[in-house]
Image (cartoon, rainbow, N blue to C red; front, side):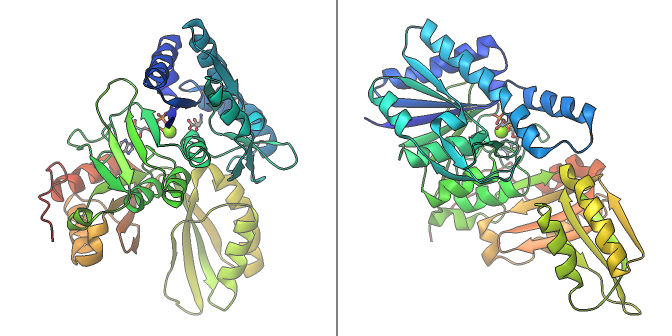
Length: 411
Ligand code: ADP
Ligand code: ASP
Ligand code: MG
């Protein structure tokens, strides 16, 4: 019997009517003769509400307690879904992360899954249950509740699909698939029929929230076919799968943006060996992920070091950086949280030149100043002022003609 894992996001379980819609989608797969596991997120807005509550108490709430708090949203939605499934006449059972169990490391608020112990689920599936699992949460080796980072239910879905060797992991969301860019900010965005794991990984790591990065990493590693589709229609969505030859012909396949980073600059740091190691060593001890780093050329033996960190970690990062800056003898520490990173992605960039120049030209002509640049084989990112994000995305989408279906010639 095929196994299908379905994951539904917050909007898809936003109210009881929508929970019933989810139940019917699960039942429909079950009635086709599949074993069905449903992973759900918290009801729309709930995780944000819980985070805001803690921040009313303090700017830096204890991270272990944050996970105890923010994992509760999913507890509500799994129970509501299981109750609905039973009312509709089906055998259903809900599980929290620690009941499954989904074992993670102890990095509270951004834990990584180590192992999914799926015997309970398998037993229930064999007995004809529709199994409902809480997304976003796990448990560490000491029994502490952990969460997987924002958007983490995608990762729960894929991890369970990988553990059960499921035939597909359907990610149901509030748009019809993966688009050339966020359809909510660009009405010319075009739905992709398929996208390679690598391109999806880049789009996700560069800010496209349609899938959490870690879920794509796991899907790629365990070759889980992921189908991103809408909860509100039966249209086929986008298949995230291995790269095929035709994909290389497309130079730019998508544009993403990320408004969740902030920029920190250390001004006049002595330009000598060991400085970067000390600075970034301290930051990593705080479990903060640094993204882009730029060091200016040295003038009079000092230099400026600029880097970006997640906005949510800015306060924590500044506390660490200010201390190191003092030890290093830097003049001052500046920060800016109204930046955004806009990126173009495409495996075809590997074999085409002039793409970066075109991107800079488009931004320049739109009057948008570039603050930082970073490139890799298949992406180019520019940090700009946050207020120009939507403009930049739309201009780039037009310039690279992403609204048009590319002409694919087999080589
Ligand atoms: P869920 O609650 O279902 O997990 P999310 O809000 O996390 O939903 O992710 C879906 C959202 O991702 C869409 O509503 C859309 O605004 C956004 N998004 C960003 N980039 C893209 C893209 N390239 N394709 C599709 N959606 C995107
Ligand atoms: N509820 C969590 C969040 O809002 C997890 C998820 O939606 O995937 O981030
Ligand atoms: Mg999500």
